[in-house]
Image (cartoon, rainbow, N blue to C red; front, side, top):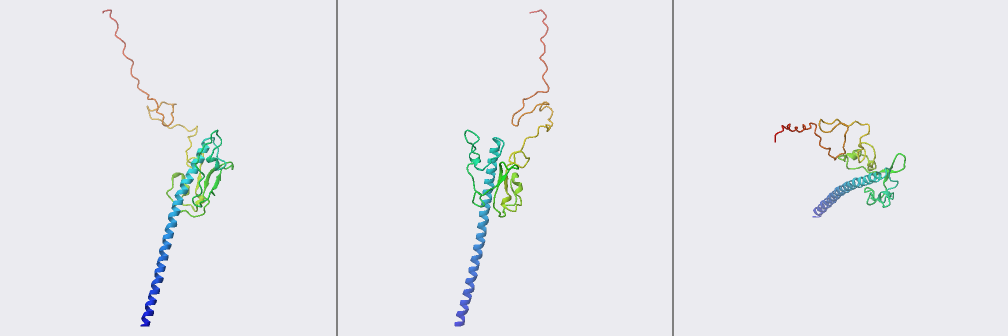
Length: 210
């Protein structure tokens, strides 16, 4: 009887250990899923905040063709009698929770043309970015997600530059537009008639009879 009781206690102890290990494994999986979910949400916030900063820098540059010297100027642009607000507030870095952005300066170090996260963590998102963020693909860390506004660089900034002055205009289709005339996008051209109507016939000669 004592041997059977001892054997039962041994099975109970092994079963308890197995249950503890199983619960620990489940908690580990749940914690990992939770961390992944939180990181993905922070990634989405980083993209949103980064785009907001880039658009604010673009708006600041549009009024005066120069970059802001500080991020504070995006909130209150004092270059005008009534300050302009290009950004609602200075958002912190979602990956660190602090306003510790890496500031990306212009080549002459006179202004801020973009920001980047200071986090060295590896991103979960590897592909599927917007065309303006294609450089983020397969990035090693969030610090390489650089939200930069290039004023006059094709395909690298938010807005596309206009065509150079010396660039010839595309050929027009016959009858659509006379040579040497252009129009702004969205402004319709006047309707032209390349086949004018013949002049009205002259009245018959007066025969002198009423």
